[in-house]
Image 1 (cartoon, rainbow, N blue to C red):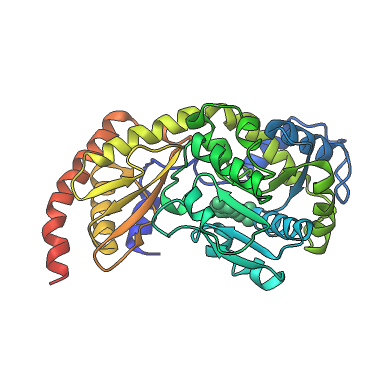
Image 2: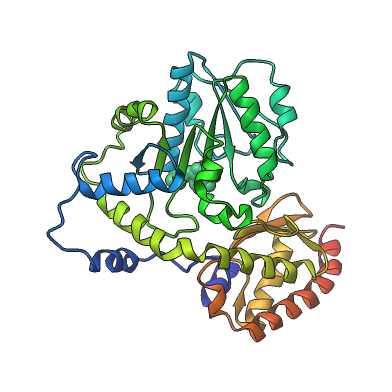
Length: 369
Ligand SMILES: Cc1ncc(COP(=O)(O)O)c(C=O)c1O
C-alpha cells in the first residue's frame, strides 16, 4: 500500500462519503424483515414488483424494471430506443459513463453508432444538438455530469432541450445515476424533472449508499422488452432481493438527507476555494459532489495531504488523479461522514492545507525544473 493510502487509512476523520460499505448495512436492512418473506423469482414476486412500482411512482413513470447494474440497464435502454425508432444512432456527452467506463459495451454488443455531443470540458447545449449532422434515435443526458465535477444544466435549458427533442422525434433518456442528489438544487419533484425525459435510470449505491442496483423507468409498453433484454444480458438473477432490500432501505434512510449533503458540499467547496493554488468545479456545487483542481502535480498534492492528515487527523481525500505533469484533481462527495468531523479540526485541516500549499508552490516548481 502506498504511503498516501496508509496515511488515509490511519487518519481518524474522513471527510467524504458515508464510510466504507460493510455487510453490516445489509444485515441492518434485513433485520426488520420477516424471515419468511418470499424471495423474488426471476423478476416476479411482491418484493421486486412493489419496489419497481414505488420507483416508477417516484419518477412519475408507468413502469420500472430493477437491474443489477446501471451499465446493463443503460446499454439496454439505448438499444430499445434504437429498435423502437428504427434508427441505429444515439448521442451523448464524450465523458458519459458509457463512453468512459463500460469498455465500449454498447458499441461492441449492439449495432449502434454513437455521436458525441459537445466537448470534454463543458456540458453539451441545445446548439450542439441542433448541429447534429445525422438523425439520432435517442440522446442520453447525465445529471449531474460526474466527470465535470457534477455540473448541471438549468431547468430552463432542460425544458428547451426536451421540447426540441419532442418536436424532432428524438427520445431523451436520463442517466440519473445521481438524480436523488440533484433534487435539492432543482427544487422540484422528481416527476417534474423526469417528465422531460422518455426514460430514466436511477442508481441505489451512489449518494444513497446501497449495495448495488439500478432501475429503468418509462411507459409500460416501451418497458416490456427491458425484461427480455435483462434475461439476454444474464441480469435476470433468480433472486435480486439482497440488492432490492438494500436499495429500499438506503432510499428511505438517505433520500431525506440529500439537501444536507448538498449544503455540506457547498461549505466544503467554500473552504477549498479560500486556499491558494486550487479551485473547485463547479465553484458553487449543485449537489453533494464537486472536483478540486490543483495547480500542482499529483505527487506533491499527496505529500501535502499526508502532512495535513498527520498534523490534524483529517483525511480530505483518499485518491488524487493526475491531469498533467503539473496539475491534478480529486473528487469530493459529501455524505454521512461530514457531520462526524469536528468543525474545529476541519478548520485546522484547511489552515494546514493553506500553509502547505503556499510551500507547495516552491516544491511543485522545483520538482518540474
Ligand atoms: C453517471 C453514471 N452512469 C452509469 C453508471 C453505471 O452504474 P453501475 O455501476 O450500476 O453499472 C455509473 C456508475 O458509476 C455512473 O456514474
